[in-house]
Length: 237
Image (cartoon, rainbow, N blue to C red; front, side):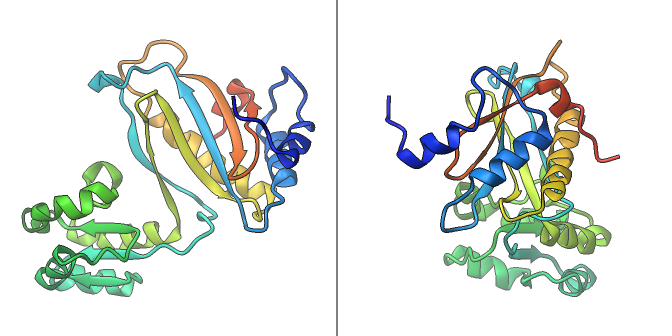
């Protein structure tokens, strides 16, 4: 087992052995322990009871963080005519159709989110090798394939700050909820948005308790065990 560094031991000493923390306490502990020379990301990690090998136990979706992710989001939109204009008006960083497809095919991936209208999907299917491995391929399940009239709102949502939610192979959901420099109440609001979305997306194949354990951590900090019941009861209402 890897040894903890002196700094991590000092931070971990603030945690009571065997105790789980309510979200507000955990957020304050995370902020207190984030003493790196950069603005650490605050992360949520949920161990679920799912078996990702079964289609009806998988989870995938998007949560919009009311206070953003703490970093600028570059948005590319594959659209034409009025939809392209709506994208530009909403603040998309790059908009195009065949010209943008050609740029991406040649290696251009200087964006964080790609949005497309349905009629463009047939054209950009060939970009799967470029966009797919970077997790940038537009997908209806992540609200990145939208009707023409919804392009503007999709761009605004993406620019505001959103996180993609999905299970890894070990049935754990990992999600950023902001930066350690955020106010505590803003991190709680973002955490509630993520939890609310996960509760709505709970797979139909899961019977009984969905989340088994929950931890809050920062980029360089220890895992802070969360009380599952109070954490999963958070809502944005």
